[in-house]
Length: 329
Image 1: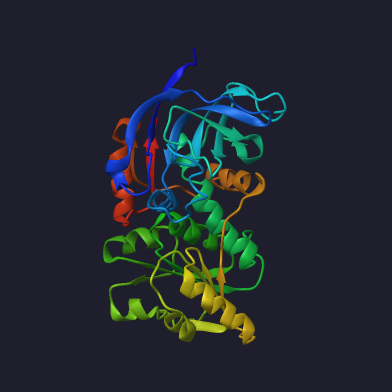
Image 2: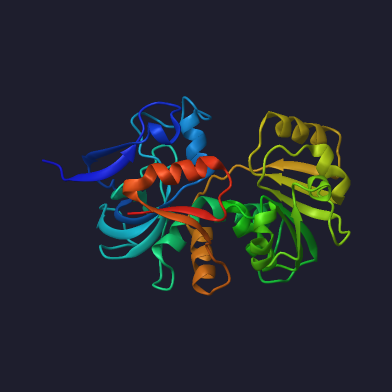
């Protein structure tokens, strides 16, 4: 008989925190190129909640019931026959298959290619915060905006919207590793927090200046890492430099229309939708190293035991988390 584990799952779209159920299910078996992890921490992302709401139906979840969560840290307990980089006992950070999830459980399987070693200087909770949120911030700044994290490269003025959130708090820190002037937006209660991350200027989005995104230093933005929702192109445009780009991390239909229109009219100011599809472990390894070196930190909004996963889910649904929401297993 298969060994059982505790897990949290939902079996239909919608339902919010009340739709989560505590169950006992068989421990998964790793495939040829997978590792079985005994999980220590899982972080929640807004994407997890949107999947439950049905934003990607009928593709994600692939089938019900589903154990949500993709960003995990833990210990390798078993490896598939083709795995060469890991052995039982290794501490790791991993990004689970987005179609399948599996993070809110005692055990999960991860692809070897999306699993990285976790040094002892990086706690399980710090590591679990990284995969989707920090990878998204890194992709926006480095791959799309061309920022050099070693401080070389031309000076850039960067705006990060929702700078106190999961992706935003990493984006501010990563941006400051480059040759940058960084402005962040947040609510009044988080102004000091965003300054503590290194932001040069902070805008309270509830004020007229904040809503208009006007830089307190008078800078036009070369790059906007747009982690918030509900800000129109007409608000961004007057604040952009001649070749300014808005990298939209939660693109909806209107931003897709703007993207196409700007391309068709050869506008130098661009809106770029960003979809994260990690192919390998290189970027995640770099992010773990930056945490180890003290150049990047995961800030915790709150930590919850697996038995209180509904509380973590409700906190995430509230939409005002400061940093990352962690479930400890």
